Amino acid sequence: MIEMYHGGPVGIGTLAVNIAEDRETVEDMYEPYLIQKGFLMRTKQGRKVTQRAYEHLGYVYNEED
Image (cartoon, rainbow, N blue to C red):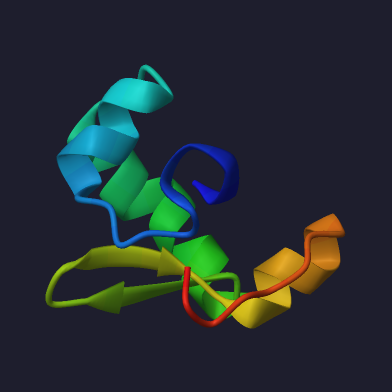
C-alpha cells in the first residue's frame, strides 16, 4: 500500500485483488491483525497505512501522502 498507493486510502476490494485473496479473507484474517498492531486503520474512504507501519518498514512518513 505504501509503494503503490502512497499509504492509502484504498478500498478493501482493491487490496484483495492486489494480494490475490478473497475480500472476506482480507477482512477476517489480515485486517484485524494489522489494525491490532497499529499498522492499518479504516476510514470512510478506505484503508490507510499508519505512521507506525511506515516507521516499522523503514519508510519516511509524510502526512501529505
